[in-house]
Image (cartoon, rainbow, N blue to C red; front, side, top):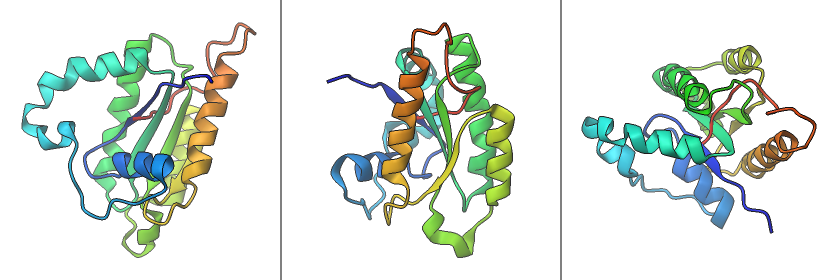
Length: 166
């Protein structure tokens, strides 16, 4: 069985862990338990080299923002830049993801804004909900498809111009 190294990136609280746990176990974590990067936000600089290492070893990237948090949408742009810097090329298997579509009434980032950014980056765009599992399986199936396409021996280094994952 082939192993895929997917990196999911995004601001704290956007649902990176929830999406991953929902995909792997089929369950939603109701209580928010911050991961190390979120928990030590004040000491984030010490994790910068760790993030570079994750990016260097990653084969595909899921860039996640919360569609109920405009700042999280802005925060993913430098993350994409970091991926391109570390990978040293723009054509990296990536997907831009707006999570928390179950909170439609609290939306701060329109579908159009997410779609436009993905088009600018030439990568796929999806809206998901880790809570009700909306498009979660499709998200991970798509990143695997992107990685498989990028790995084809056709001289192409990748499938899209940059989206992120972790």
